[in-house]
Amino acid sequence: MKTLSVVVAGTGDIKDLEIQPGTTAGDVLHQLALPDYLLSKGPNEPFFAAAESIYDKVKGGEKIFASTKAEVGTTVCA
Amino acid sequence: MRIRELGSRPAPASLREMFSRFTRGQAPAIRVQRRQIPYWQERGWTQQGNTYSGNYQTPYGAFQGWIEQDRSGRINFYLNNPSDAIRGHSHWTCFQHRNNDWFLIHMGREPKDVSSGIMTIERLIKEAYE
Image 1 (tube, each protein chain N blue to C red):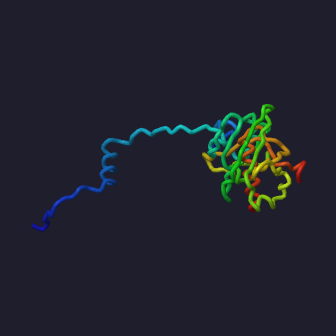
Image 2 (cartoon, rainbow over the protein chains, first blue to last red):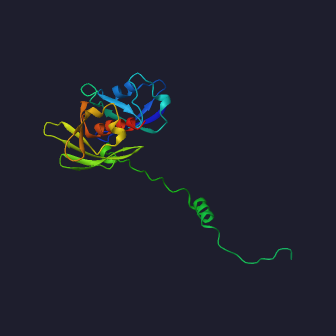
Image 3 (cartoon, rainbow over the protein chains, first blue to last red):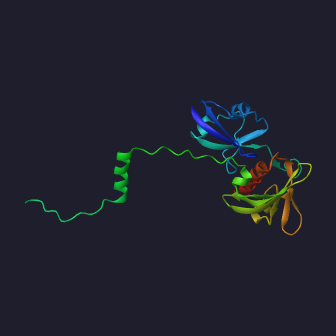
């Protein structure tokens, strides 16, 4: 088991969780009722895919961010 | 006499502190409260009414930004004087020149809050430098 703190970027709310091996980013977002969000270690790190196990990618007690999905104009500009 | 006392001097502060702890016991731990603040605030942005000003912060530097939230709730993100690296990014066409050196960043998928938008733009700037 590892402890994890998920910071909801928009509000600053911190949710403390305990995760087991194999826990995915999707599991965490589902548990927190944040379906339109993505998890990441911060803006300098990639987002975790929903099906990606995060247990091995975070340290115990680490703080990660939940932010809403956003993209700079992919559909219109690029 | 085999031993001769030459004098005495005070023990170092670190030793005195250690012995003092043994005699008085460990002080109770102080619980430090975590700050629960939005990402924009944590990154030093300031809010004035429906506008925010601050810097998009990346490992490659801080880039001056400005954000406005209109009455409909739509959030517009601006970047001041984008660098050559940003102008060379594949999404440069999403930057629309406004006045002076300010550029509006067009969001194909709009964030639901200011913080998520800042994180998105910080990601894009980082990509531009990689």
